[in-house]
Structure formats: C-alpha cells, structure tokens
Image (cartoon, rainbow, N blue to C red):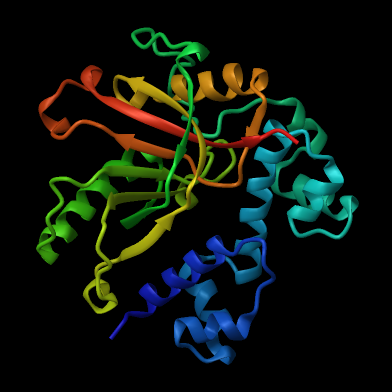
Length: 290
C-alpha cells in the first residue's frame, strides 16, 4: 500500500507540472486516494502550507524569473501568476518578498545562488563565447527528490537514487546522471528548495516497483537550451550561471523559458576525482524573444 506521504508527494508533483491550471480539489484528492473532506487538512499537515498557498508561492517565485529575464509587461506577468489584475499581484508579491515587482525587475539575481559562494570562481574563467545553443529531445528519467540547500540536497539525492536503483537491480552504467535544481535560494526558503536527481532510463518501470521507494518516472520535455560547461567543483557552479544569465542572455536574441534548468554530471566516478577536475554541463531553458 502506498504511504500517505508518498501520495502527498504525487499531488505536489502534479501541481508543479500543471502550475498554469486552476486547482481542482476533487481531482487532487482522487489522485491521492483521499476523501475530498479530509484532503486539504492532510496536505497542509504534511507540507506545512495549504494547497492554495503552495501553488500561489510557486507562481510568485516563478514570476521573479519573468520580471528579471523577460520583457513581459507587468500585467501579463500578473495574469500568468494567477491574478486578474496587476494591483492584486503587486500586493501579494510585496507581502511575499518585501519589495515591489518593479523593484525586483531592477535587480539581477542568479537563478541558483548560495550566499556563501564567491561571486566568481578564480580557477574557473568562463566567457559568454563558450555558450552553445542546442536542442534536446524528450528524455525519460527515473528521479528522486530531496529538499534543502543544494550543497547538501544534491549529493544526498544522488546517493539515494543510486541506492534505490541497486535495490531494483537496474543496470545504470550507461545512464546519464542529471540534476534538476528547481528553485532560486535567494527567493525560496532553504527548507522548501527542491532538487531532483535523475538517471536516464529507456524502459518504463511498473509503478508497483516504485511504491515506497520515493522514485518518480518523468519526462524531461524537449526544447532549446543555452549550454555551458562548468569546469570545477559544484561549490562554484554559480559562476557559470552568472555567465549565462548576466552576460550571455541580455545580449542574445533569447529569453528564459518556463522550465527547469538541467545539470548533466559528466564524470563516471566523481568520487575518485579532485573537485577541480569535475565537469558539469549546464542547460538553461530558452526560447526566441518575442
């Protein structure tokens, strides 16, 4: 039998994947196998936020990317964030972030940032000339999610994912390890930051095999990405995101697309390498400017 926490996790993933659709409590309750009468109370008990507050926060956090890295009008951003008018959006935004949307638009923060990281890694000189625009096909992956600061959440997610795959007897030698850093730590509270560790899988696994293991089969959508290789420790990956977001993107004929960044970890046995010898390909989701 699927645990209650696992069923709530499935609901959270469904909300995230249908963020632009209105919430239907009856549908979500049915998805989780709960009665609609008790579902909202159970969700808040497990997540610490109501269903509506959870979706509202994700939409507001997403809107910061629209403000800082697109030319969308404030009225359009308000609408995409679930508000019928800009005034309501402004009030909700200021309540959440203690600043107005206009103030946020003037600030250029990085999608992934750690306050203790240096602005640039002295041993990882990069330039916008190294950025390549590529198209990726749809990818089937098996994933495991953790929450918390990326420097702790990412290695933990990878470790547990490998352990779970070993439990299932899966051959993963030829699989690509991919990280999905969903949130901006300068915006999202550390305990709410989401990270998915993924392994590419060509075969669909029976759902009953994944029950209780916290694993999720998902499709990473096809699309256009700005690709940049980060050389060195994950601790300093901010420098590569800064090149993409602050130097390359403003001069390119592209804007951010509403999708998660991808991190392809290229080293087969990273534990045997010095941190400065590691290589990670960063894929920033983009689309042609309007």
